[in-house]
Image 1 (cartoon, helix red, strand yellow):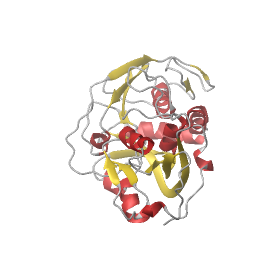
Image 2 (tube, one colour; image 1 turned 90 degrees about the horizontal axis):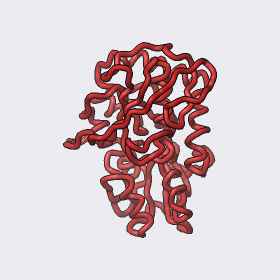
Image 3 (cartoon, helix red, strand yellow; image 1 turned 60 degrees about the vertical axis):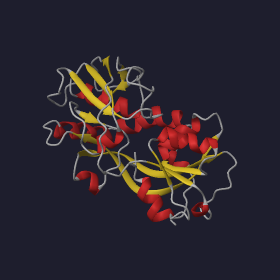
Image 4 (cartoon, helix red, strand yellow; image 1 turned 30 degrees about the horizontal axis):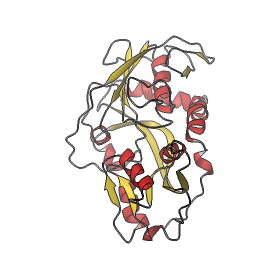
Length: 288
């Protein structure tokens, strides 16, 4: 996520995984056995040496509506990032994808192991690039403001509100440096807890990535809404193990998916419907 703080993190990857079978495909879209995903492009157009034979091992941080369909590795069968991983596996000629749930802070601190690629809506930042190896960008991201339905929060009064941010996200520094609330923002251990605090009235608003906050608003049965977003210029990238020999071929696959429209199809299939709205249509708050 637009998740940022690096600090000393003791958390390691949570032990959970799921292997889903895959079938081959041609250059045209076809049904696949990668859960609910459709694969595109040429099977075997890239070559990688995965940590587990014939399997792409991908780490993420769950839950993440829209990006990962399901709340645990055992239930994942779709979502933008899962299907992006499935398409990489397909183009690498692999027959399965293994999903592992991990601590977000451990991911961005380069503390996890035994994986081929990690995707968890991670914003590419210079600080992170010092400790992890990023892929080519695959998504542009802004940060949004999530409130209870009917809130009177606006761009003009947000600094007087009680705000929440999630540990490790770029929103921590964004709120501190840009929004500058009169009361320091409350830092939560995870996004779920932060969103619950908005719903219960402990804080007035949560600030985090637009595509993520839209997903939580959609899942709130109308109790929560996204009232605005700030443009940040951030982009999401996947994380590779440092020095991975697979980085170049997987970057080639991501670049090809950007050029051939696959990434656009994944967004249309998973983000719009799941999030209940197009992130680009959320009103833009003027920079503080």
